[in-house]
Image: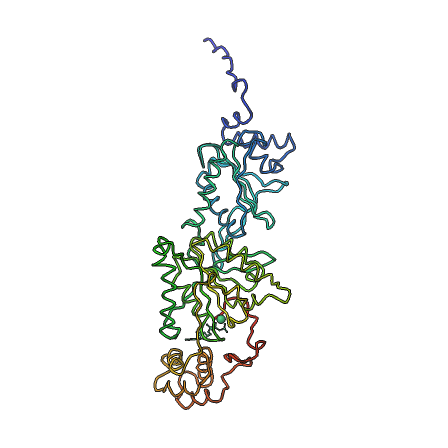
Length: 460
Ligand SMILES: Nc1ncnc2c1ncn2[C@@H]1O[C@H](COP(=O)(O)OP(=O)(O)OP(=O)(O)O)[C@@H](O)[C@H]1O
Ligand SMILES: [Mg+2]
């Protein structure tokens, strides 16, 4: 039996084959082994490569002929882009190669806050290579860097494919405003922590009109405002009449301004993303706040108690928060999808520039309730406990009280008498004034210092 003569081995690769083409033809396992070997021999772990070097190597071009298309954006928008990038990484998982952001650091992951205890892992700092025919026709890399001073999302492409990268960037930016953005249509809160503004999901607002007693004429005004933002929006736009930009809600303490804003936000929920700004984000990060607001689809920005943050210019004509606020608001004037609602105790304390009608198309003032409204507010807060109570008589005894005061009276009655009390007991509390808390709430003419609260957040 003749042994088979040894066959000449075919050359492993055609002459002129590059390392990349050899690697591309190798199996996954062989490729991993070769990469480790290469790193060991060359003593150069691939995460010593910068994102650009990594991209050049994988795309197969010289670093000097790479084009980069960048988006530099605020923290939360960048995390949303990270989430969208992750969707693509998952979609092409068998072909994508993840690299480090450089500096010898491994790729890092970060989190997108979706509410108490719910966090979505998203790329923080890394670069991802998408071979030709995956994300686009040409091979591309996407790098993301969420460090506070970078905040950068870049698509690296061969220079001749720059327009493809630009088109892809537009696709990503549009996806941010679409249903693919898990923050869209939610109620969000903007906070400043460690100097950086972060936006996270907060509890849904469970406020509705039945809990807030206002004169009918005011509800009619509010309905017109809402129509301009919703049902009449397209028509206004088509006719070139401009859509709604904002509403300023003024009125003394405790008349229901914060409550009203929550009702409006709840009514717009779903169609609009709501961003509740805390005092620090109004004071220190208003530009970022509006930059973020453009990325969640139609958005309602709520600035509660702006007078605490935006007073008048001082003697030298200066007020940084005010100046930032005015330029941020002017910046959104052209943008049709951002609506601002601000509240203030004291419109007089606002710089006239902040009130100008071009910045807020609607200014409504919630009045101190008259006797009739006080009676209805009392009825509302007493609920089932109101059986046998003469609302009008108690309301009469509460001359000058705000809605919040009326609620305090009911609260005091429950504290003193539990779940059942008489008309006389309630009247006694109303007349004694012992429902009043130490700080004199609800007195519009009280000195400014006493009226001003240094509340942070969005309490009701
Ligand atoms: N007209 C009203 N009808 C029913 N409840 C009211 C009314 N006005 C105030 N309240 C109740 O009083 C409480 C305080 O109201 P809210 O915080 O909205 O007042 P505000 O005008 O924002 O006050 P501040 O200027 O102190 O921020 C809320 O629980 C609210 O439900
Ligand atoms: Mg308030």
